[in-house]
Image 1: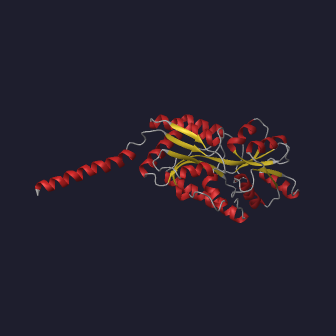
Image 2 (image 1 turned 90 degrees about the vertical axis):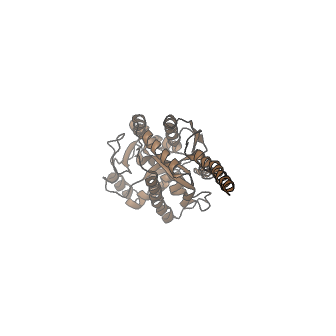
Image 3 (image 1 turned 180 degrees about the horizontal axis):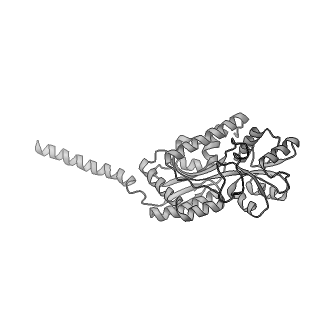
Amino acid sequence: MKLFRSTILFATSILALAVTPLHAQTTSNYPDKPIKIVVPYAPGGFTDILARLLSQKLSDQLKQPVIVENKPGASTIIGAESVARAKPDGYTLLMAVTTTLSSNPHLFSKLPYKLADFKPVALAGLTPFVLVANPSVPANNVQELVSYAQTHPGKLSTATLGNGSSTHLVLSMFRSATDVNIIDVPYRGASLALSDLVAGHVDLFFDALSTSLPHLQAGRLKAIALASEERQETAPSVPTFHESGTPEMLAYSWYGLLAPAGTPDHIVEILNKTVNEALASPEIQERFRAEGAEARMISSQAFGELIEAHSKTWGDIITALNIKLD
């Protein structure tokens, strides 16, 4: 009987060694191989630049290569779906943007992913929208612009990136807040829109501050107002819509890392802590300021709440406009 009991105990110990360490090995040693960040855009844009800035910092801190892989197309859907279907082990991450989870779920009824397919990891940054104008526009602030638009209905034109795009939604927000009649001119890309704006073929554009900033600094465009709570260090002379009398005009593009649903909590905590440490570095802070972006160090839970808050904002506008892209 003693021999039988000893055999059972020995077998149980062997089973524990065979199972428990295997699970521990997959999580407690994290990371022990390269990490991949999927960017759902082509190389060269702000999302890609941000991912590459973070990848270097994360690689230095985690002592593992952090590789950026670009998977552009279909309004970020291709890249997002690939991560949603990836193994939830912390080695495949998505550099998501507002489009991915705050507007796409309201625009596409057959979206191949949902918010529940992801686990928020860390907010990387926020870029406020700025209303920029060609220098020929006879208005230098919100009040003058609204007055001109109301006395010249249909005279002003605004570039957007098409029906349901963030630029179109911010324009809709502005129309609702000010009751102005401004013509919407859709473009296939921000670079084309900005080129035509600089050339004077359109009058206005709601752009991310990060991409308009070089044109503002060079005097090729002028800024009407920022859709942020506070003025920005990189453009201190540009007032906010809030201080210009339209406080409902708050609109940001957010950028952040997401993991597949089911990724262990302690891996998310490691990544969140590491990203926040990277964002706090003087190098990243300086680069963010130069790009007109805000670095905010928050918890993964707070990031999830931010995604949901932005989803409600854009969802309400999309529902009111009855926009569907499929």
